[in-house]
Length: 330
Image 1: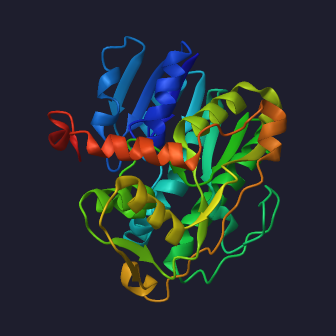
Image 2 (image 1 turned 180 degrees about the vertical axis):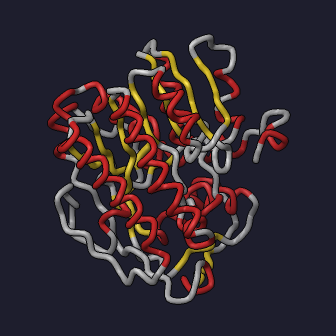
């Protein structure tokens, strides 16, 4: 297959590109390097099946040309991370909604297949045990920018579903739950790389809120494997799938575990949400996925434990950055 990966120089996108190349596909990535980084894919540049285009998902003419040439599109380009959304909500909404609309317009025009990446943020404040794909969304006021990301990704999902239902475009939607691993940075609020970086520097680990809020962390290679298997399966078309891990941990316990594993002398400091983000900020207290649907269809089953993930992230942050990495960062 000839494959386009939007956001392919990002944390998840670069791991997806690696897997696609390993499976023999020809891969082109489109990335504006606003959050993606060239060093994430520099090791792939010698591969003749790999191509990189630096450009914006909002460039309609460019996206048109790229989609015309491929068979599959994995659409990952988006504004991500709570801090980025709160800081620049208008640009984030435009990137997420209009970017997805441009992709869907062109996969329809050229009869291509597309996978749309969504997020567990879709569920909002729903704290049910084992969130299912058809569970209700519970959100706060639309005047709180915290919920703009969830809303924009919901619009993406609605667009993808309608393109499949009305125009027969083969679309697949995946909701990713707290995907982590090497190459993820602590920018924009990503908790594990931020905690690890603070622990390795001997700084206090900054836990937002009470720290009793819990999450489930999915290893990035488990995530992209599930994405590829779903893309390959025609029965996944027109549907949405949770991809996550069922192992749940509070932020307090996560901070304690990272301090222990790094043998750091760091302390733990709690910072109110109003100071970390903005006044009136609301957070999800619990987010646990039901992955039965993906498991039944494609055998999705996360293989990497949280301890394994943390050891890998710690090791990757302890290694010195490659020469020229800082210059490549945008």
